[in-house]
Length: 490
Image (tube, rainbow, N blue to C red):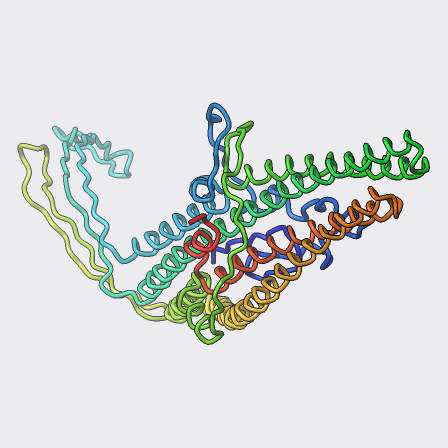
C-alpha cells in the first residue's frame, strides 16, 4: 500500500482545520499568533513553523533551474500552477503511481504468454573411449565426429488456468486505480498547502504595512510631544514616553519585515520558484463571505468526491483480491507449452520439428507457505477495512468542523472590523485631547497599542476566514477547484 503524507499547514487556531485536512493548529491563542506579544496583547510576529520543508514533502519542491529576470509578479493562479508543477509531494505521488502501474504489469506477466526464439549451430567431436566405450576394431576409430547440429525454434509458454495469479492481477489493478486517486488527492493537498502559504504571505505583508503605519503614527506623536516640551507646554515625561513608543514600534517593524522575508522564502520553497527569484504577490484576497452549505449536502459531496476516500475503498478491494489469491495457492494450475522450428545437420539440411504439451500442477505441501500468505493477507485486509471506516468517520468530522470554523471565522471578521474602527476613533479622540492640552500623551500611547492589537486581530480574522474556506474545500473533496474559486481574484 502506497501512502501519502498529509501536510500540516502552518497558521492560526482561530479556524483550526480538522485532522486529516492538512490544516493543523500551531498553538496560537485566540488573540493572535503565539510568540512575542506587545503591550497591547497582540502577537507582534508569528512563531517558528513546527513543520519545515525537510520534514514535509508538501512544503518542499524541486526548484526551477533559473530565476526569471526582474521581479516576478505572481498571481494566485500562477502560484498554483507552479506548485502543481514543482511541488515535491506531488512529484513523489506521481512516482508512487508509476510504481503501482509497474506492480500491475508484473502481476499481469504471470497470465500472459511468454514467447521467445533461439537458433543454435554447433559442431561436436566425441571420444567414445573417454565415455567408457573401450574397444579396438580394425578400421573403426573410437573418435566420432565432428558432428554438425542446427536447431532454430520459437518457444511459447502460456498459463491456461491459474486462479492465484488471476486474483493477484486483479488486486494489483485495484491498487493502481487507488494510486490514481491518491495522486488526485496529492494535487488537492498541494493546492491546499500552496494556498495556505499564499495566505500566510499576504498576512505577513499586511503586518508589515500595519507596523509601518504604527511607526509613522508614533513618529508624529513623538514630534508633537517634543515640540510641546520645547515650548514648555508638556513635561519631559511625555516626550520620553512618546520616544519609547516610537522605538518599540520600530523594533516591531524590523521583526515583521524579517518574518515577511522568511515567509516569502517558505512560499517560494512550496511552489518551486528558482533559488534567488525575486517576486511580489499581485493579490490580497480580501474578505468575501461564502454562502453556507447544508451539512447533508456537504457530506454527500465529500463521500463522492474525496479522492482519499475512493483510494481507501479501492485499497480494500485490492486487499480482498490478494487475500483470495493467497487462499488459492493450493489450487491446481494448468500451463501450455510448445515450440516449433527446424533442426538438422545444418541450415541447408534441416526439416521442421515441433513439440507441444500441457502441464497440470497440483500443489501438495509447500511447508505452510500458503497458510502464512493467507494470514498476512487477511491481516492486511482487516487493517484496510479499519482505515476505511476510520476515514469515513474522519470525513464526517472534517465537514462538520469546517462548517463550524467558517461560521465562526465570518463572525470574527465582523467583530474585528468593528473593533478596528472603534480603535481608530479612540486614537483620533486621544490625539485631539492631547493637542488641546486636556490630557497627557499616555492616552494616545494606549490608543495606539489598542489600534495595533485591533489591526493584528483583523489580519488574523481575515486569514482564519480564508483558511476556513480552504478547510471546507478540502473536506468536501473540492480543493483544487474550490481554492481557486474561493480565493482567486474575480
